[in-house]
Image 1 (cartoon, rainbow, N blue to C red):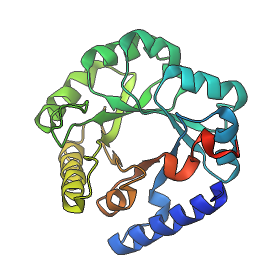
Image 2: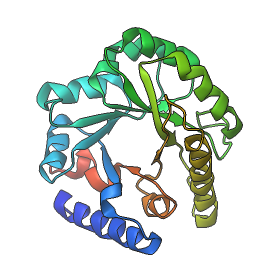
Image 3: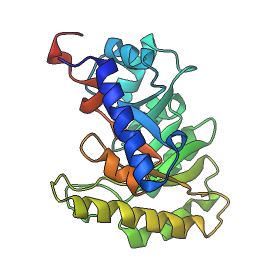
Length: 231
């Protein structure tokens, strides 16, 4: 059974190889350990091997982790669908929100946040009905709507590729998001520098890096599961 250190070594080697293939710098890639399915103890073990960014998809997950893990030392990323009634529970506990796609959520953030929140706009590039997010053609208008909301800073775009073995399809989704990111960034909007790309998970993060990802969200491939017996 692989240890966390062994998993991280493999992931680091694959990230470096992807950076080399695409002419990118390793320091431009942030690895987010998705700890939504493991305990605070396992999350602490992840931190101890050098990870400083944790991803959770429920307010309860963030609050439970923070009972044992100081907010001051870790960047918490909310990566799940947001319910407007729960914004108040977590918005001041996270540094990054990866799933903004509705104006009512933005207005709730404006009401509840005590400081600007770094947000990624979630985009449904693949068009799959099972996925949340704006259609690509809706993104610019949505960001313009956010101009009066000073508690939101759009730092980038996020998407999820289809779960498939078709590497070219995955690549095309990531490439399309990068092109859209460049278009939004070129507008030089004060509220939306939009320089970042959150894309790539355990099964496709190397492709995402080759296509420009700045943030990759790695769950099981890094943190494993509670059932492995070393929890």
